[in-house]
Amino acid sequence: MSISAEESPKARVVAALLRDGNRVLLCHRSPHRRWYPDVWDLPGGHVEPGELPGAALARELQEELGIAIATPSDPPAHEVHSDTADMQIWVIEAWTGSPVNAAPEEHDAIEWFTADALGDLALAHDSYLAMFSRVLAAHPA
Image (cartoon, rainbow, N blue to C red; front, side, top):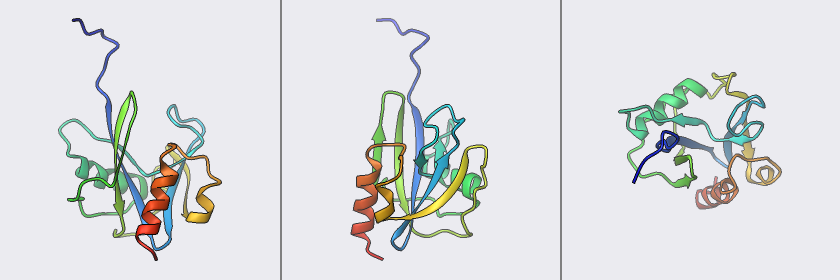
């Protein structure tokens, strides 16, 4: 068996579903982004070599939204797997600071959405809408 130079390990990605009552926070990916341009996505990013996923999530939320979270100790609430990436998603309901678009090169907007507005959005992953609905229904405001 041979391994070609084109084969590379899957990207390890972490993301947060920030929930505030009956709303979730999404980031609109800039249209010029190479991956998933012009769609609404969860804040997060890649796990760096040697970094634990929870620590990566805390770092990414600080970098992208300017907020601080406690490193998650629970397993992720949802996972998304593709040919090129494995993403772990945690529901985050407590943070310090007010979310702002601290990474305008990645997102051209951030916005809070209620369940009734989510169905009209172009989302980064097909599984997001069911996950959002499940989280908002399981944790009523």
